[in-house]
Length: 242
Image (tube, rainbow, N blue to C red; front, top):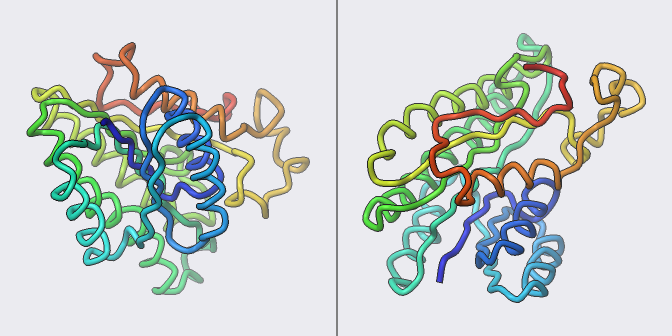
């Protein structure tokens, strides 16, 4: 009974990852924070693929909520295991730095950086005891290149890239890989305010990516063919930045 826990999984890239991992035979734990309707739709689509789908509603930036859900689930389900963790939860609060409010700075950092820590520490502890596991962190072009108007977002994703490389070295001897996927412009709710017609000319492939194209790279990183790949950041950006 192997499960994949995907955070921020009710829509967009998270939803596409859930469906792709379900195709690979994983049972899915769908984390989300607020959108019950979309989370239930994702659950139904996952179940239609013949695997189990559990909704787990909590705010990744709230330690008490993470402990209550993730730690308790692991302790209460000894016959099951979370063998794949995809840290996908994140938000944008864009502005030039001098106009970023403290609230917007901390909210972006809390969800991406603290959320990574709160969730991953429980799951990796369980993986260490089983000597197997795959961790994939969804970062961003912004964390590699830095983008104006996204100092907070760039800082949060850059931190996760560094954490990916460090954690990979800590757990590699136990058969656990830790990698990151860095999307560029992908058609999701997070980019609904970005006009594709205005920006696609910046992309060598002359289009925005699809969530399924990110999910395909995640599928590779959790599969057998990537067993010797760890501590890496794979860009999915149509050639926009390398």
